[in-house]
Length: 226
Image (cartoon, rainbow, N blue to C red; front, side, top):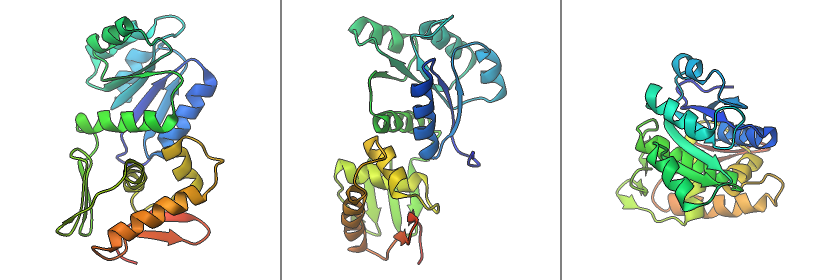
């Protein structure tokens, strides 16, 4: 289900398995996602649904990704993250030169793609750079975390976990959802999430009341109050 006000993502990828996986990961991260197997009807899609960002495969049937990238740049200010199996420097420079905001080479970890999409949306102003929950302030743009007057240092993994909770603030998310979004798979030992949540919670609660809550039998939720 689309979240009101959620950034709109259009995924253009001809491989169904990859397209479905990307849709699941981005939807799980709180984005409103539409997908297409090729670039047919792209002009209509850009005008009607006005995506905030396009995840664009280069190797497509019909018009390839480079042609579609130029079309997007003529008709939209949407961010563009290019996906391709081509890892040559010339192809990267071509994509970036034609207006792509980032370039991800296949195969990739879904968590990395979600992070790159999120970073582009922040740079283009589609995601608020600072999320405040009570006295907790998460500065995505600056990569800073403050609780009251204290600045808290996190590991890169803890930051990814907290960012995922922040994107889903006031919503209960399961351990499996966190695993899939942060580590890129959903069938690993759930204690990986428990350990990181426990450490993150200790760091936060050293400076203020609990904001990362456990919902028995369901998962976790980031919110102010009990």
